[in-house]
Image 1 (cartoon, rainbow, N blue to C red):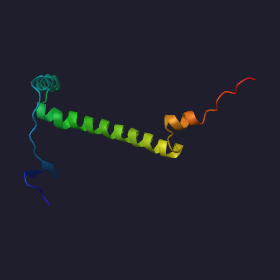
Image 2: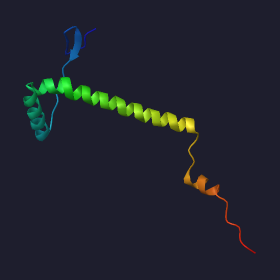
Image 3: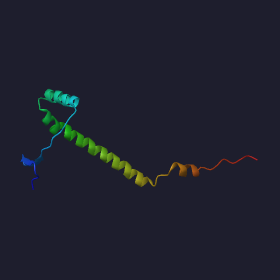
Length: 93
């Protein structure tokens, strides 16, 4: 099944989309692309998006690991519960 607006390229289905960038960011990307001998579009497709996806997946994995750790550690106690478990000091008579 091929989506509307998509094409098959190198045996892979691709979808076209339009991106609007801040002028300053575009010129930074343009300089980076020029220094690598590629176009801005190639830089975004080959470097920026894959790098962002990898970092996003790593962040999601770390977040899930923290959630899993909290679940395994037991229920979280509120500060009020923590205070109520502290014994009051005994008065000297």
